[in-house]
Length: 271
Length: 305
Image (tube, rainbow over all chains, first blue to last red; front, side):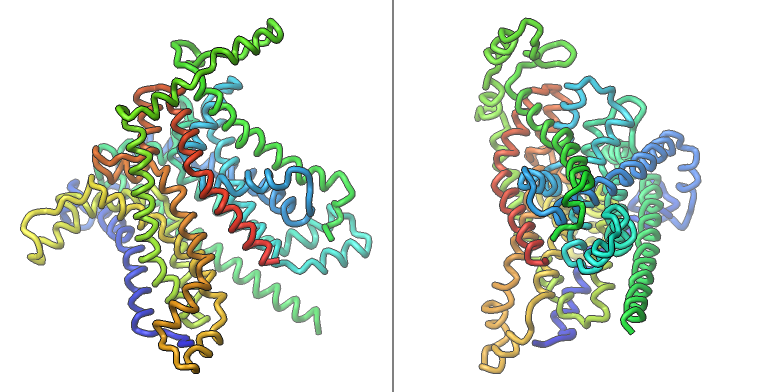
């Protein structure tokens, strides 16, 4: 009944967001610390960012990670969108329960199990481990996240437009690209971004499935973190946080604009 | 009903490609893990035996089957090894974390659902944003805060609250903080979507009939948000049981969690067969929560239709 902000609600939100953001903000601040001791503030400095440029191992790892994230999320977006269509549009088919089980299970499956099982598969079929095995592993676990995001858009979607196109003789393939895809595009884009960040972020599955020459950035960060907190790692993390924040904000502005444009067009079409 | 593909090859193609992908790269690997959990470690490539060899026809298969054994399970379930304790302690740590997550997440989700409509998308975005930044980074951030010479201890000592640094890093308390922090968006989002759907006229009716707000909360709001509570709790509990990064970086040497034991068994002891048996048993522990979670998800989607 009481809409709006009571003192209890304001306190919960403020405390909750403080909890979520203070650790990240502290990490960013201490990446500009002049001292090598991460917990003693000794003035502002950008030296750790410059020293990163000379750290070739880290740059190599970042490059491997970005390539894996880009290609795996691209493939995961296609496969995940197909899976979402199969689950929402094609009614009952043989083995549908198994199929939807295989879509939902990876969302909660502990990473150690997924990683170990994929590694043993690659060993059993004698597939050389490295870039490609990490790529295949990432496609597999991120496509399920894409499927769920796209599926939730497909179920709330006005089917009459598709039906009208089909009734007017538009072939199904063309109907998908002219009607369905533009309407679910925001969900497909957020699915892609989710897959991209999950892949960028993954330590456990990549550690199991990788081989020589394909060390990813999280693996590199992890092995350094185990030795202790250093300002260089804070600097790497700050750069990653900055990239992700900028991308997420741009994406949300773009989808918002696309949505309001679509609404305006729909209104115009109805008049 | 369905989009025209119904008749054509298009439908077949759209179903078959992701289906076969998941059969090959999600289901088949589990069968391999199961098979290897029944094998023995050997010094060879690959480092387990028996191998299925069908060159001699059917006798190869019977040979193979006769060499499988449950020895690894016996080893994992032996009390003198630490695996059973690790399963138990993982379940306890995950349960306590889930309860803490509910206590922290519920007020946030509730306040978000009650906030003016115009700022709700912004609040939602602010909850999701930390989730986009790396999990590893967020766990790492806590090392600098909780360590003995870390920012929390420095702050508390500067304020004169404590004289000697608190030992938080490398204890189970740090693991709880890490899990609650990293999983919070997974708890808040399902709770928010359940609370946001709540019909506020129900609460008005209760108030008109003289029901005090706190009682109305327990009689109306909380029961109606239970699907969100269940979804959020499972979404946090299941991965938390198998968590590796948080106990490894924030926990101490006495923090027992099965994800960490599996990792150590695999990378340090290099026993593929025992790690497989650990994975199979972990999956058995989690299969019921996973099935419940799937049913909730399925029902949510059917309701959305």
